[in-house]
Every structure is written in structure tokens, then in C-alpha cells.
Length: 269
Image 1 (tube, rainbow, N blue to C red):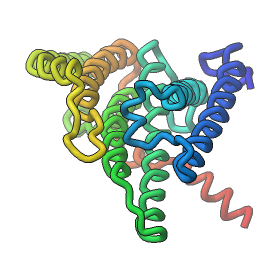
Image 2: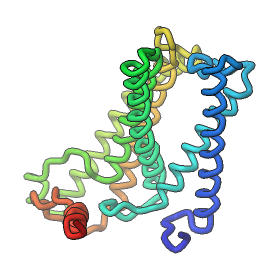
Image 3: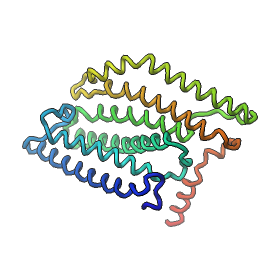
Image 4: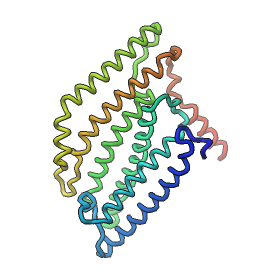
């Protein structure tokens, strides 16, 4: 496993082991809480998970859950995907860790909605929190996905004019693009900082039955991720500065690795 490491090196195995242990602890605590909730023996409900004061099991659950998420994201970011470009700087690592958080978050949304469907239509006991939890997770998934798209250079770009430019003009266009991204990030932070700070300090909630602090978390996250996107754009500019000019064609959209996987699957069958 260490030979396949991209950046963790000797830490790869300990991080993996720690993620597995914390994941097992999270499942064990979740099982205890579910059993306690079902039997009425002092379980912690989802409403109380947002208000864990005086409930050690709720604190333990939150600590183990977020610890597992962090360690699993770091471990998964140490594996290069088939279509991911080579990492060129510290910002790439930040973006890839956040991308793995988004990947896990997407799976979490599926699990939450599956639970809601079963609870609603099989047991006729719909939840008050599944929809809002899905929205909460989805907000962070979309933000982190945007950061990942910038790192992967997979955001929407129009190459019709760019490809016919000489290299010096392409570099000028790249500088202008990054400057506009930084201007947008600065304007957004300038205009939204006070509101985001106020929402965070008063832990503004969603105003529903479950009442999660969506505004208090999503608003500051928007400003933080926009700044990270600006830093990633600058990192990309520096990394690509001395690269040879690229010619873009519709064939660039073809995922050769995926096609090869399909061929291998069909061949095995």
C-alpha cells in the first residue's frame, strides 16, 4: 500500500487503520443509540444530535463521525484517479481531500433518502430530519465539487478562440481569467462577510421542526470555498505556465479509461 501512496507515504497505513477504527466505533455508537431509541432506554434522537449539551453519547457520536470522515477523505485523496491530472502543489491536496468529502457526502445523501423512503412507505413513520439533512449535505457537496472542478480544470471553458491564440496571448488570457476569479472572490467576501459572521455567531437555524443550523454553516462555507477556488485558480496558473500549448478537440471528452473498463467487463462476461 505504501508503494501506491501519492503523498502520505509512511502515514498511509496508520491513516487507513485510524479511519477503520473510528468507523467501527461510529457504527457501534450508532447501534447503541438506535437500540436505546427503539427500546426507550435513553437513546439520543436526531433532534438532540444537534443539541448535544449534557449528552456524552451524542458528543462521542459526533466526534467519531467527523473523525472518520476526515481520515477517510485524507486516505482516499492519497490514491490517484485514472483521469486525474498529476498533482502540482499544496492546493491540489486540499482540493482532492475536499473532493473525497464530497464523494462520501453523495453516498450519505443516498443512504439518508433510502432510510426516509423505507421509514415513510414501509413503516409509515416519516422523519422530520431526512430532507433537511440531505439539503445540508448537498450544499457542502456542491461547494466542494466546484473546488474539485477547478483543480481538475473541468469547469466550462470555450476554446474556439483560445486555441488559435499564440502562446503569449493564451498566457495573458489565463492571467485575466484568474484576475476575474480573484475579483469575484474579493467582492463576494467583501459583500457577504458581515452576514456570514453574524449567522455563524448566533448559530442561525433553518426554522423548521428539526431546525438545523444551515444558514450558520453554509453561508461561511460559501465564502471560504470561493477563496479556496481563487487560490486553486492561481495554483493552476503557476503550474501550467510553462506547459506546451494544447489543442482541444471533441475527442477530449472521451474517457478512454472508462471505455477500457467497459470492454474488460464485456470481455469477462
